[in-house]
Length: 215
Image (tube, rainbow, N blue to C red; front, side, top):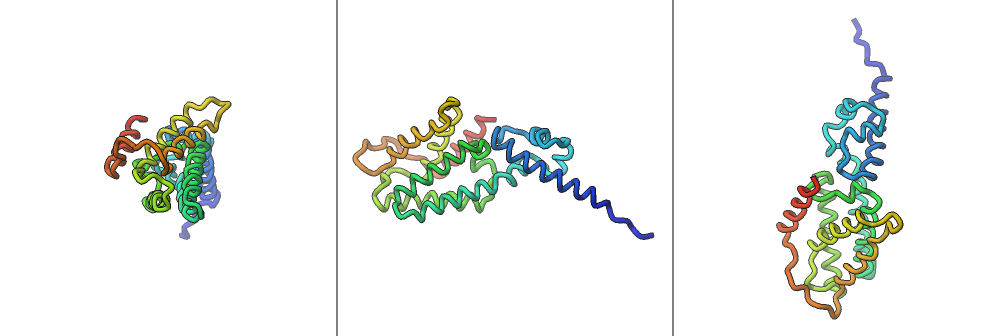
């Protein structure tokens, strides 16, 4: 007896549900960040929780698919900043782009290297571009020599706090404090930094501790 194929309608419904989940995840993670659950996404998509778990084993798997593209764009932006003729303007433009993206998208706002959501390749590209931006600026004499690429993490964490606490009438308050921070990184006559920056291992521990603190 000839085996009948499953109805195409079921396959089409499954594909449609997956697309609805992805579309909902873009909205939910952007509005609520990574504190949102897979159940929240399913509810927003108008599908059952079981359907969500059939397509994605956990929230991290869904977030990876949704945020990978956004992280790729940030890596592209960081690399594009290296092509700006003026090293200082490229450095400033990089920071403005990253923080503006975090202000618009809560998922990026809460994302850290320890989440394991961004792929290793995207993370490597981003970190490599940041190191090169610092090195290029220091070689050009526009970034103070005692600054380090690992300073970026704590700076972004501080700016996230500004974003979180900004009143509704001042959604871009972060620009004020970013200007203050960038001014402190310029290589001119300034007070010396009285403590050393983070090592790579210390930076990783810093990020891991922050992740634990928001659970």
